[in-house]
Image (tube, rainbow, N blue to C red; front, side, top):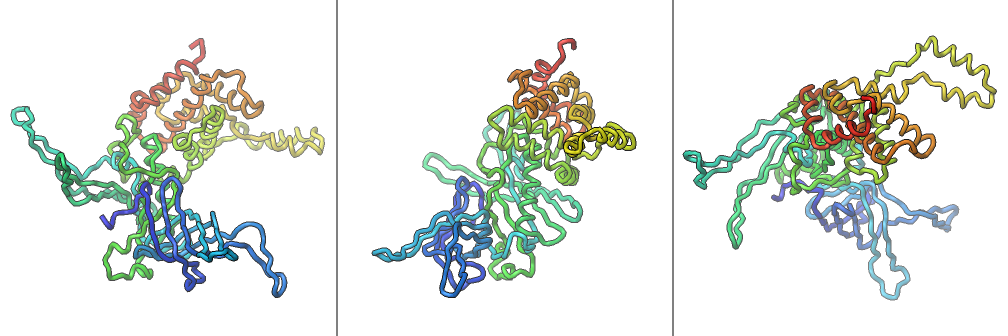
Length: 492
């Protein structure tokens, strides 16, 4: 349909006129192209001046190294306003002095395209709502617009049945004044006539709409999309791509005053999220999903997720990074997994110094009196009253449901000891000679799983569901076997 959002996984092309905001009268024809692999590229038949110049004195022009970049470029193409943000030249061909004069040709890259409005920068708050579609959002939302009925008189299917579309009430929750809504939309039924038969179709889409308490910017919209993308990636335990991102213009902006219809308020954003979604890709298997809205209702998980995402985002980024872009070397994954555990524990804000401060401070001062001045700063920096890595690992193991943790890590002492030694050997000596390759893999997988179980605990997943995940989720079940085989003391 003409009003469908622009999918980030599909190619697009817009031919029109382009100009710099401070020189709208100097318009250059060109074509904007997009594909998910190469991003945005604007080919101009003409050129913006990209040389860096200065005039140290009248009549003298000095050309400097490098090329100009542009924060914003405006355009009009395919009957829509377009804003390009964070633009840079990639290729320029000038024909000055050529035997045959032809227009200059210039190719620019851009980080973001906003289709449907002219804005002056990414931080201008001119949007009233954000809508985002993410891979596996429909499965996670645990609601559907479709109902199927198969006729089976006397227990035997007779070949008849129906597929119907039913309205689904929107699920909403307000967090600090911002409203989050899980919504559905669908196409009208249509029949696809083929030479060998006929296919009837209705496509349903699940999306999240965010209505912030105040107008938001493009940067804000990307943050909301990232918030939901991280939630779905965490809940499904696999990389989740953004399929489309659409904004609604706030009332009172120039582009909202249109008589052509309410759909003109839609503004599509084309950018490069951590993963681009594909709307026709196969959905995640149910057995690989940690939780859905059946386990944690939408109105409960969203407030908890907003809090967890804000408090623990660095650790969450590290864990999700192992899903989106796993390193090819075990050493990188070791540092990431153990670092995530340490950062997560720090983010909880429950650090208690091993020694009372009133005891530690005079002890440190007494020790520093015996240190030569030249080494004082170095020694002082190493005398810290913080928990050790091993103590942090013990603390993490004690937080989630203990039955689930015992099933995941049968020997917490051995795991904490071997994990600490592996990280310290790698960080301080550059190698891990006391660990086999298989044991390092087990340390990475088990430590990652411990952080995941803590995150599930933080978002409020019930103890029974935590146990079920450890027992039935294919990857965590395999991780528990690794812990039992490779991270258990011989005496136990």
